[in-house]
Amino acid sequence: MKKLFSFLAIIAIISVSNCSRIAENNDQVIGIWSNIAEISTGKTQNQTFREEWIFNDAYLGRYHGIENGKITIKTDFKWSQDDGVYTISYPGLDRGDDLVILKESQDGSMLEDMNGNPFAIRE
Image (cartoon, one colour):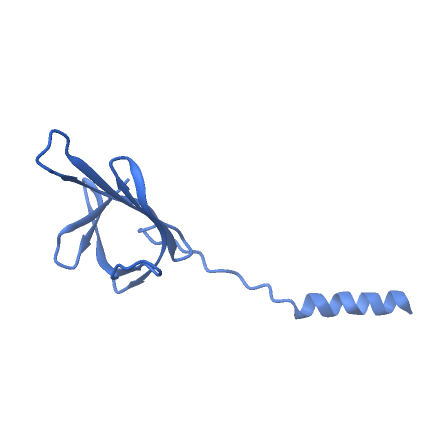
């Protein structure tokens, strides 16, 4: 009787558990993107500011702001894609959402803002 009850309990657990699959995300934006700006301060050494976005397949990512080789900003971001427009939002950071478009060329992939200005290039 105990064996039958144990067997029925195992069958009930297996049948109740949900074995759903997460849909595979193969979006072209997944990967590492960066933008480098050099700021002239009038001194002998210019300052460099590098931004880096690491997009993953779970619609999340990591953003780094790197000034003169040191990480000054490090935060997570969320991203979504609607009709070819990518929205990057930074919860917890006092920064507005970025809206970008993925452009492919023979030279490589580039993200552009909505005005057609370069936003980041794929590494």
